[in-house]
Image (cartoon, rainbow, N blue to C red; front, top):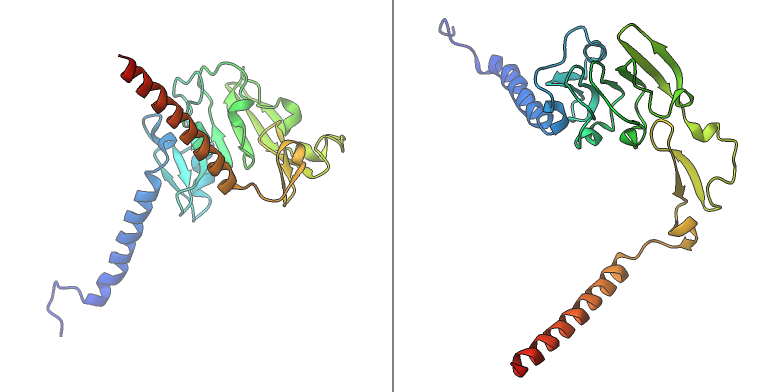
Length: 229
């Protein structure tokens, strides 16, 4: 009979595994700087918190909702006195939901959201225009203190201009109201006219030889000046 008050080794396994999981997740979650840009944590009744708690695989950390790999799925920076989202905002380009309400945001936010192709819900102050304007979203809803931009549109499906991209390129979304032309496999360069992969060996070879030539020229010039003096 086991001594009273002592746990068997098998009973410790689940607890140890849970502790290791928490520690590994904490290390992953601490990585994105944007999550701690604003002090405090996500409020329980915020849209980001409700979205995050509705999916078992997600968890809240500081101002972010992250998956098990530490990738940002939601970001809540409401009431942070932000005039702009800041230089680390691009770390949240994987986010599906972002809340920026109750901030004195200024200027056009379209370029700020370049690359945010996964974004489906964006909550903004009422006086701030949705990035890409109303044409970039299926629904824009105004409330007393904020507005919500929902369901980001893929403008590649509605441009109506088949010649927007070159022959060897195709249209791809690049964030709300933004598009980009992606070269087909095997093509690169201006208007995707160059065929074959970009040669890094050739690039660095040319760069190295140019640097060496300049260094030799400067060395020779300085040597002549030293002899003259």
